Each structure stands twice: as C-alpha cells, then as structure tokens.
Length: 82
Image 1 (tube, rainbow, N blue to C red):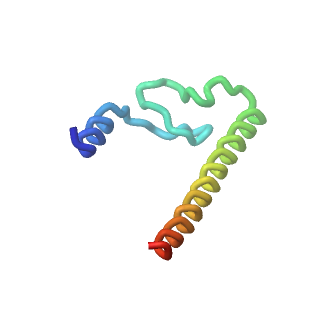
Image 2: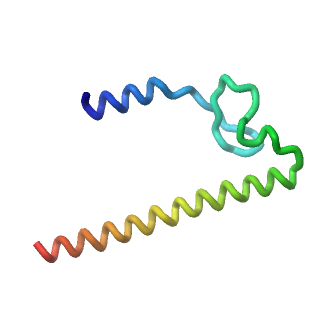
C-alpha cells in the first residue's frame, strides 16, 4: 500500500471536530461537551488549565526549533565532509 493510500485512509477515519469556547481545544462534534474542560468548575482552575496548555505548546515549539538547528548543523557538516 502506498503512503498516499495510508494518509487517505487515516483522513477517512478522523471525526470532524470543533473548537471549545471555554478552553480552545478541539473535540469531536458528536460529543455534547468538551472532554478536556467539562469537569473544570471554577474559572481559576480553567485559567490554570489554559496556562498549562500554552506551556505545552511553547515547549513543543522550542523542541521543533532545536531539531531544526541540529538538522541544519548536520546538513552543513555533511556538505563539507562529502
């Protein structure tokens, strides 16, 4: 099976999603409430949850930058070695 076939099959299995108005995360449209924040009762806890989400996004972004720099350095080294 080709890689294109695998990606087409994966996209067929995905459920449509919508953004949550409280936390901003996406969840399937067939669920009545956001599974991420439906159990959070107070606004203070919701603010902490949003802060945690943003810190995870920032950490992922930083990791991507590190991988890019490492790949760039390896590319330059390989260029000069061969």
